[in-house]
Length: 267
Image (cartoon, rainbow, N blue to C red; front, side, top):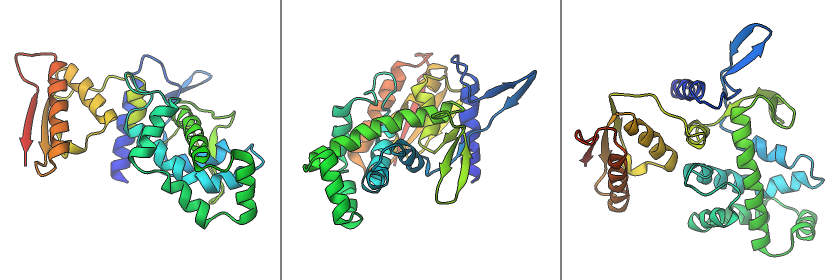
């Protein structure tokens, strides 16, 4: 919990510095200025899936079939920086399909199909989407694209579909907007091209596990003059090579090329 609170403070600090004047940070009520802290909710994507299908007559069946698939694909898309500058857009179905194939995400449709749906529900789905599993996957990817838009809106605005909250039907609780999960905390600032605060030195442990939003955050810090110390596991040869390429890329964006900003420590 302490880690989540710390991440939230970093996230809010970044949002206050954006030139886009994001409404997450401040609500004007008459003459008062009220700081609004985001709600951290790790089941946010699940709630957004329910919200997305809420107006569909077959919504409960679609939630059963696609909930887990959309959760995993949305997480992978944010980890890969979809929607950020220079990366695929969240509406790029072909790019989403690449993630589905790479991480074998079809299993998250096959599992619910075989284990959760009754025969009448399966007939409803085939009438609605077709009989091919590829049709199911493409429908799930389109739903994921819409969910990613909702992820961004719910993290940066005070209303989604004219509601100031997300509703958890299991606990019957309202989760007040803005709402973020751990993936949003790096993905949203990266998507908004925010400048991260300057730090004299940044230690990057487990550098072989760096994802795109993390790399963009480090790039922003290096551009502002921060020095990085990265720690790698040499046993993970491929990932270590990728991290070294990242270090070279970050070095090219350093503010002072006479003083190398990157030091690599390989274990």
